[in-house]
Each structure stands twice: as C-alpha cells, then as structure tokens.
Amino acid sequence: MDRTLTLLGIESSCDDTAAAVVRLGKTGPEILASQVLSQTALHEAFGGVVPEIAARAHAERLDGVVEDALAAAGVSLDQIDGIAVTAGPGLIGGVLSGVMLARGLAAARGLPLVPVNHLAGHALTPRLTDGVEFPYLMLLVSGGHCQFLLVQGVDRFVRLGGTIDDAPGEAFDKTAKLLGLPQPGGPSVEAEAARGDAKRFTFPRPLMDREGCDMSFSGLKTALLRARDALVAEKGGITVQDRRDLCAGFQAAVADVLGMKTSRAIDMVGARPTALAVAGGVAANKAIRSVLETVSAKAGVPFLAPPLRLCTDNAAMIAWAGIERLRAGLSPTMDFVARPRWPLDDRSPALLGSGKKGAKA
Image 1: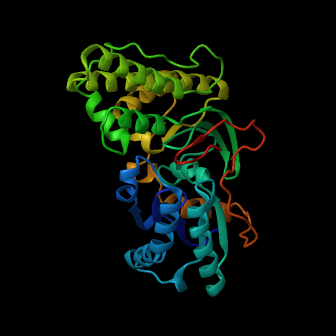
Image 2 (image 1 turned 45 degrees about the horizontal axis):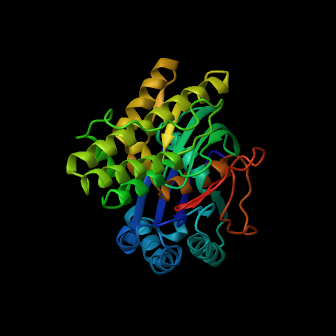
Image 3 (image 1 turned 135 degrees about the vertical axis):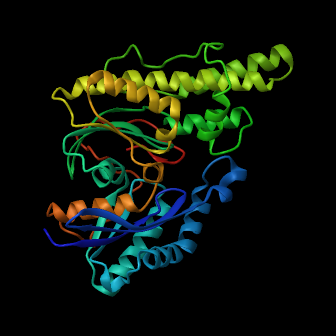
C-alpha cells in the first residue's frame, strides 16, 4: 500500500481522552494533530482513577476532542481514510466509550475501522518517531503496565518478562500517597528525590536474584511504608528531609531493578536488536532514563525514547498503529469486542495482578 494514508485515532483506555490525525505520505509519517484531555483533576480527591468517573468523562468529552483534532489538522471526515480506535486493554467503560464512537463514525461515513491494542500503540511508536527497523526491544513502563517486548513486526510481539504485581508508575503513585505528596506521584517523587540521599535507607531490589526479566514492585512500596512508620514511631513524624531521602532511596531501587532487568532482556534477545526503546509515563523520570541509557550504551544498542507527549497515553500512537496494520495487509473490521485484557503475546503465560490504571496484559 503505497498511497497516502490519513487516519483518525481515538484513545480512551484510562484517564486521558484523546484524538489525533496522522498522515503517512511519501516523506514519512506526520502528526497533523494530537489532542489530549487529562482527567487528573476529576480523580485527584480519590487518590487514583475511579473507573465510573473516567467512563462518564470519556462519554462526555470524546465528541469534542475528535472535532478539535480534525479542526487542528485542517481536515474533514471526508478526507480521512480510516479510523483506528483503542479496543483494549484498559478500563472497560472508557474503552467502550471510544469504540462506540468510532463504530458510529465509521458506519456513518463508510470508513474502514481498525481495532488497536493499546500496548501495540506504545510498542510501535518508535517507528512513528524514529523509523526504527524490526526487531527492536521495547520497555513499556507506566502506571498500569511494565513489560519487555521484542517487537518483531506490526503484529508480532514476544513478551520477555514483566511485573508480576504493581507497575512502577503505580508504585510511584502509592509512594507519593504514603508520603503526602500530590498526584500524579511520579513527578512528585522525582522532585523530592532530587534533593534526597539515596543511600540513607536500604530498600530491597525484588527478584534481582531470579533469572529472566520478571519484576516485582509491591514489596518495595511496602518497605517504604515500614521505613516511614519506623520514623513516625521514633520521632512522632517525618521531616522534609526524611521524605526526600525516602523518595531518593525508593527511586534508586526502581532504577536499579529496571536497569538490571533491561540488561538481562538484551541478553535474552540473542541477536542484537536494532534499538532499545522505552515508552510510558515513567520513561520521563530522568534517573531511570539515565540508567537505561547506560545499560543500552554498555550493550552497544541504540537507545530511543519518544517525546514525552508520545510516551504517555495519546491517540497519535493509535492512529499510527492503524496505519501500520493497514500497510501490512491486516484487514479492518467492525467485528470485534472491547477488551479489558488483551495480551500482545498470547503464547506467553499471563502476568499476575491488575494495576489501578488498567489490567495487566
């Protein structure tokens, strides 16, 4: 398929309502527009994402976000070649909101509809931003997911390992809540850690002695809770510096685990991957990114991190994944269901647990 393709993408799997228009032409892909409406303020008082509130907000906002994306791109639905929509995994109410809108638009306009796995959107983003060739290694690290994927093709993913409980982003959010820091927890903990002593508290590095790439972060969060409680019992509370040191120690432990497991994932691939790519909100953490860059350089593998706006949930990655699928000859279809769980690699054993920002897959 050599002709120009322009797709509308719709994403509503968690707490970001998003629409985007992406075009693939002779000079490569171009993001014509990418609109994202965050729901952070709606969930802030609850300390996490409330599925019912998220679903209602998506239903109320999706029409407007799609209209804004089309207007920003300077195109109408008549100039769109197809629609790509997140069909899972995620909070099922939100996923359904996006799927129903996409189905209605596709049916009304006679447009092909491409169901997209949210994780595939993340995994294929390095091809949108950097044109990386297959096969490459992807570390998807966010609030709801953490896994290593060998990306062999548009629809060929091999999961090498992942978290068996809390995802790193979820652990950061819980840590922030335990220490009285604002949500989202990642940026709050990172800011405190920058002024803390990472060596003051000794935190565990879970599963470091286990072969393979599986990870666990729930015990790390529990260790921080015990350290905080010990300080409270000893001094009647924690100081600002105590909090900074706790954050620094926690962040260093997460970075060490991700660095070691990334090194093992590279070794597991065997033949040298074309790149190590990282996506997800946690990829914005400077300390973690620095560790991953060091591991990548030591292995002689190029390191890629898409811009933050394309690392977190967005619809441009969904539109691009739809373009990739159409180019690969994978047929669009109206015959699909929204899925709360949808593993990219259904041949590997299921990961355990379910993060607060979506089901593990």
